[in-house]
Image (tube, rainbow, N blue to C red; front, side, top):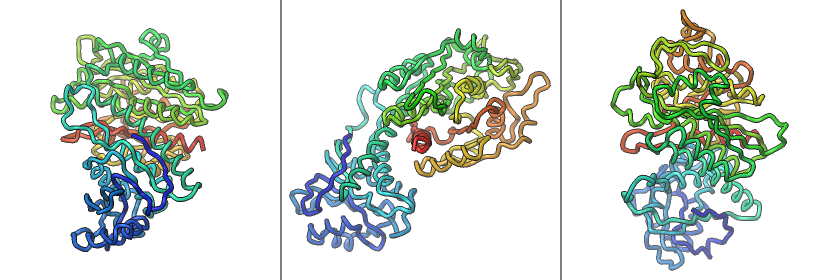
Length: 496
């Protein structure tokens, strides 16, 4: 897809499809009003004739305009003027993207970004449309012999802006959005692959290929001998039941002086999770290929950072493994020793993600990081607590938590802060080891975060539980690419 900022008078527009906005009570946006003048009042007359009020997501598609230079117009409802929130604006964009895909237009021109969105700029509005449209055009076809439907024909979208300053802002927004969309696409592609294709070794190979795209991004892979030498007993214990060896993916992006301390992203990379000896129910177990979405999002975020060449240093760590039952797998009651030296009693082998992450978090300490953020599809309990709209956020540092929340709101990839109180540590006590890997049935997402906090005392740290947001289930099953937009926005803010 090609995106471009364009400065042109409405009177001279030439496009297969023009997208403009309409507020409630049939109030046209400025460009829509000018276009209506060019079309001799066609839009106003159709609005009066049809039952279109201009509510958020309302659509009026004009396939015959009577103007040979403008083949069709899509009017998109924006709700009440002055009351358009970032969330409702994004909902309107989703409706616009669906309508645009359904046309046979190869080229479109949009002025939807002129909408007055609460607290937002033209750059934000343009960036959101690029991200929404790219996401709507995504289709997983790698393993299909024949696609279910022909691909949409749209391959170019121009954004109508006025003045050199606006063109500069629009072009920068497009560049940022394309980089974020690249990261989201990578995360989706990796996550949607089945476990028999996307093994820990395959994931590591893909990370290496992505690392070769930029001279500023170096990727190295640690095998099981390396992990054993580092003392990562917790991490290594998870793969004991699988024939697939574990891998630690290390991606190092250097965008500024090597002396500048990096930000570290850690992503859980369970390429398939059957639960081990504590095996999961069969229903929907196929979705456990998505247990590596945290790792996929970290790889995608590093790709986006490299694409934008942010003046910042970032490290991505992805502990990759499989969790399967066999005669050699972890057993409930087993005790393993972590890289930090703490012993862990495994009371439930399906609480394996924290065993990977605790050693990766300890490994992160060697970078003397400015901050560490881990991302994991860690607990079903997080879905029970928050549903599938926000990701859960825990942190041992108020400034870091606030910065992530700000970035999440900007990216519309939202989070909700959860408690990390000392009282929860009591649930992790073990009679036989330094701590247990589960804290009982109560507050499962909180005790999981509390477990990780034991390994993050030496640096600012935040934990994102994306179990409810990293993929969709049901008829629209598939990876969402979240929280790549949030992670990249956080890093963009730090670079700025």
